[in-house]
Length: 205
Image (cartoon, rainbow, N blue to C red; front, side, top):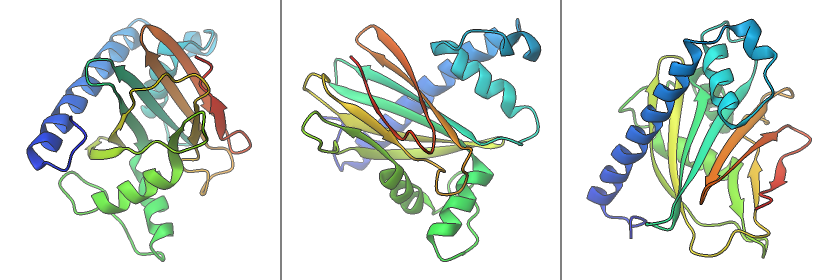
């Protein structure tokens, strides 16, 4: 299985998730070229709209707090391939807070992956119908412009009926933090909004 401690396997998976994330960003940017910010504000929030909204706003002043996550179920590998996008400065603040105020700078090829992995494991989880958090593999991260993409994989061979998601990313820093999750599971697409007072949501699939 992909989920192993083999370095080569982990590198291949990292490349795969990064390639997939870039493809999704390309699609979103294609939509952006045909939309302006005022028009987008009037749109009904749908699956793709979350990605477009986040990308649009990221080009504006960083005066808001949000993250976006894409979860795609790979039926062949029986696992969720997950890309989490956060603002880099927010991530640095969160890591610094968790490490006694130590200044943390997140860039590509740094040595902060253990800190990022620890933070994500603490604040993001897929919970089974038995209320057990599903084990997952941290694949890596990629810093891009003012954002950082974090890649993880959650193996899952069982039906997701009764499953829920927990997402408290940056809620330890900002009361107004909003975390958006887009899920693509066996042809079904759903979107979820996590706020500080609403951190666990049923998948509803």
